Image (cartoon, rainbow, N blue to C red; front, side):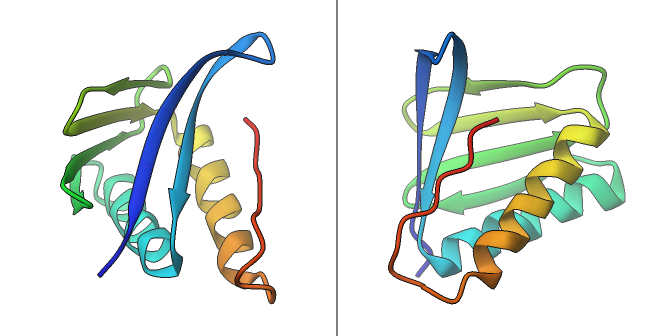
Length: 104
């Protein structure tokens, strides 16, 4: 079962960020959903840890809306590609138990 958690951190180093914490299965599920949204140019959905994640790729701006049980991510093509590259790097990590941070 994939574990995925998100938290919005307003004012983190002078910017608003969304933090993602996930196990390997969660990272892979997140990657599949984002890849589908980017490739098909249609919304993609992921249900993980009781939260519904919606991905929209190819828009004119990047933003995220977080509610208690729903996360909506609207991403530009460039941002979606960058996140996918970062997810690939997380999956390629040989030290599976160490934390990895990626700040955008």
